[in-house]
Length: 429
Image 1 (cartoon, rainbow, N blue to C red):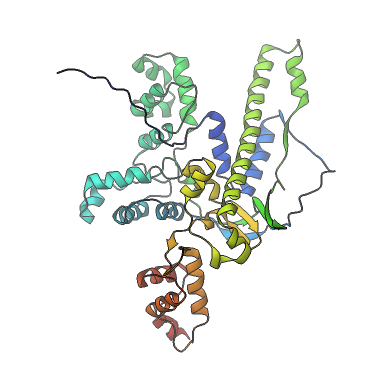
Image 2 (tube, one colour):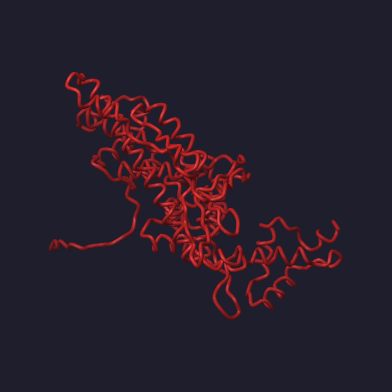
């Protein structure tokens, strides 16, 4: 049998994280208020960092729009939102929703997938395929079945000057030794140096063992918009909100310390480490702000009619639309839109609000699901209390308004809006 060697080139889009991008993504997950707290802590822990105090600098003309109380999205809500915007088939989406409903607060699938398939009469290979798709969702590492799988999923998204074969081998074979910091045993078994093990262990320690933790709480939070959109003449102007965030710079005092010949090697090493950390933090903040700006800019590009006229003109849009428009990965867009708020002419909205599946019109382009929900809410609000509208009657009224929608979809949207069925509304009035 002849051995044939072939070379092929395959192009694919994936998120690759350099050390700087890793830090930027961690900051990207924070709300405006959380970011302010983190930066304050960083300034305490790193003497290299200073806050530029510029009392003469005028504030942006953006109106103050903070103090709005909102419930933070839960992990399940965040994942189901991504599921609805995915390109899965109806069968895959149904199983995906079932799997997501079985995740714990840390984002793990503790219930064996085989048991779920046995109970539901499903094919295990099909379920594995769906699970793999769910494991591409944000946060990275979610829907893992154990710590080893969670960390390995995150390693796939890393990039940098590291030995990834060693990192993966340490995760695969030596989780218990990593937990005990038994680096000698790891080095001996994998036949590498202690220095290599320690360097790889540092990378592993920066991974998130509980990917669902940042989204596990549903406690209310006060909103400070991350960005403002204003109508100026015939154009929309985007302004980042830096209020409450320290404007960081590198302290000149420590620059001088490095320049002095009398400075000891130990002191120089300490200062250089802190300097490197400070530079990465400043660049990560800049990356965060640029990303939020570009995503908002793309949303404005896709949704000008909503900004002008309101929710009835909201267009269907999915994560891929913006990802392709600005050349970023869908998981990055997901991070940007979660717990980030924009103050625009129509009010204050979480960025993820603008991503909706579409409902077909009888004649014309599709309408965003949020716009349809708004129509349903208006119809119920204007109904005769003695003769509440049935779901079927709402379907008919929407069709008269050129919106083609199934009765079960109306029922689903009604429930999502917290509106009781017509029979229960009648009894309560």
